[in-house]
Figure 1 (cartoon, one colour):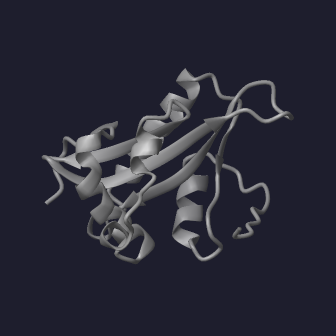
Figure 2: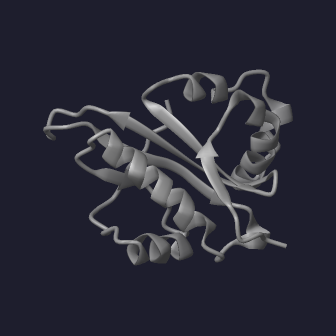
Length: 146
């Protein structure tokens, strides 16, 4: 049962193992036990990144990660939502919006020019969600694995 008092907070090093269980659900593989390395500690200690977690009575039920950087074409730093995930059994209960509010607030606090989001073509529900909270679909992202 989802409580009324969801706490959104910055992740700590102590959240690692529980957060990796959520990441496994997010990426669809057992990343935590499969790899001997992980970028979690590098991200959590870098001032250019934030990880927010949704805590429901001591249980982590979602997370959002955001990075901040400079690019030549904008006068201020920009933010990019790297990942947003809410555990499947409790989606559509406002937790994603609470996580996004934390990301937006942190981006404003850092005086960012824009907040960008990348989302895969198949993530139709995510696209509806992002537009519902005020984002505009403006183009494509392209990737190349190196």
